[in-house]
Amino acid sequence: MEDRYGHQISYLRLSITDRCNERCRYCLPQETQEWLPREGVLTYEEIIRITRIGASLGVKKLRVTGGEPLVRRGVTGLIRSLHAIPGINDIGLSTNGTLLASPDPDGPPDATMAQQLAHAGVRTINVSLDTLAPAAYALATGRDFLPKVLAGLDAAQSAGIASIKLNCVLMRGTNEDCLPELVDFAHQRHLLLRFIELMPVSRTEVLRDDTFLSTMEARRRLEARFGPLTPRPDFRTNGPASYYEIPGRRQLIGLIGAMTNLHFCESCNKLRLTCDGKLRPCLGSHLEFDLLTVLRAGATDAEIADFFRHVVERKPKEHDFRDGYIPQRHMTAIGG
Ligand code: SAM
View 1: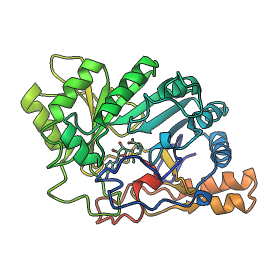
View 2: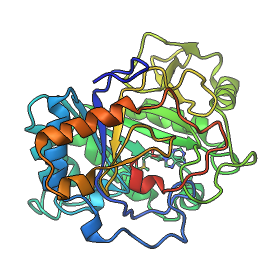
View 3: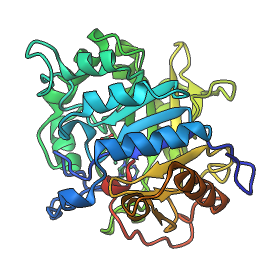
View 4: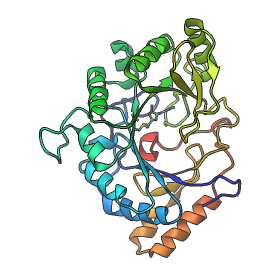
């Protein structure tokens, strides 16, 4: 599928739940406790059917996300089924990492969730980790779960997950002093670390001048500690990150500048399926199309394929984050 601007769509992000066991200040703040009713959330059968139709139209890569995808029962079974869909050749998972070392409630008691995910076909895991300082971690996420995340990273590495990335959201006043420590940690653990600019994706006012920290400033802070970073435009991971090499090490770090990088959307290849069955052509646009109603009204596969094409035709050239965008839905429902 190709949109009006030449974006080739081959990547579908699946948010399988709006629920989460953390309360990140920039995503799902503490006061939020209301969840979508269960009947308003896509069943696994519905997600599999939609993905199969997407795959017949050229979707090759999936990322299972949320909310926290590991809080929904049966997630490893879902991933096994997604893995079996012809045309799907890459399945990633975005997680806060807190449950990776726990047993899968649907699997054998001696297997970790990470092992079960690896067996099910997950190839890459992105783990959110904004800081290694316990107090700052608790402040950012509303929970004291840093030890669980560190155990989760161990579990993912020992389960043999091929690619594990760390995602750190940049927040002035919370983690701007913790960045070099995260770089050292990623280096010691052979993990690919990316720094992400804060985006206006939650309903509350999280993005302000006093909380925003640009990737440019993060780079300056890293250079003050490590020396000049070398751009590595040759290195790409199928996403919007720009990669840089830390001097004297063969370590790369990624900068994801959704707010400040004016070329951010040029190579966008994504669609998002929200957990309540909306197909969204862009995270940073209010456009979304209600597939759940169409599906439950008995749409045929051909009609759903047309629905996909219709959404791709409406994909915007770029996101609206820089134009006073006011979020209407939490990122947990949309899927980060
Ligand atoms: N719970 C999972 C996790 O922690 O990765 C999956 C969902 S979470 C919404 C996906 C990613 O979105 C995380 O890396 C999170 O840090 C990021 N995110 C959430 N809110 C954000 C915001 N306001 N700005 C930038 N990134 C954000």
